[in-house]
Length: 298
Image 1 (tube, rainbow, N blue to C red):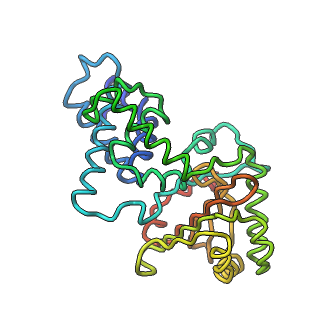
Image 2 (spheres, one colour):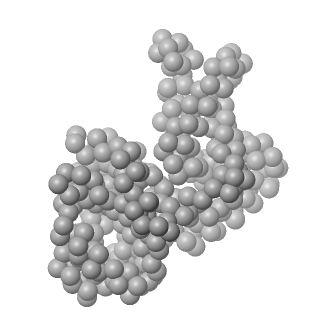
């Protein structure tokens, strides 16, 4: 793209928004970038001369591209992303859990636990929910994308909303309190303190661990505090063998774990009611190699 081209400049102004839409729709950063690139190609072909609202036009195009990609996944019988963790977005955590300028986008991002829930929706439900509930697009504009009436699009979003609310507890708003709970978890894991772990885990906590090709069978899921604590030996080994660095992972308190400088896992904790309700662990070496950690070095 030519940076001096007004059309390209207009597109670049909307790129962050478009990438955010695509990421929430697809749960994959690489696929989100592909969807945004396709939107640029379509804009370049269209020329932009007759487009009155460039942002709305581009959002509609990205929505349609993502919808097609989600439907293609199903037709090909590909493993849904609910069988693996979505790509995490990692950022630096300021001392004391503050949220200064520069972290605002990350702090407002969608948590991994919510993205996992979104994977359980059908493509049309997901698009209606994402575009309306997350980005405020009116149903009159969503309806043509999903080939529905505005009333039908509203019902799609309503069904999705009910499933999301039932499966994704709202995280505690205070980042300092959330970090305190995660620090307590890490301390208990290092000490092998079972009671300490139980004290910070919600009775219905869900642990999702995605080892990728390291372990056959895909993502492992444990439900309930007692079952999760059954992995205490693994937590202890991880906590003592690796260096854990605090980070924001999709806006939630997280840990970036390295051994001899090599990234071995990224953990995200959803804290609600002062207890951990979800733990997401990505240890797939192939996907970890593609994670952007430059924000941690700033």
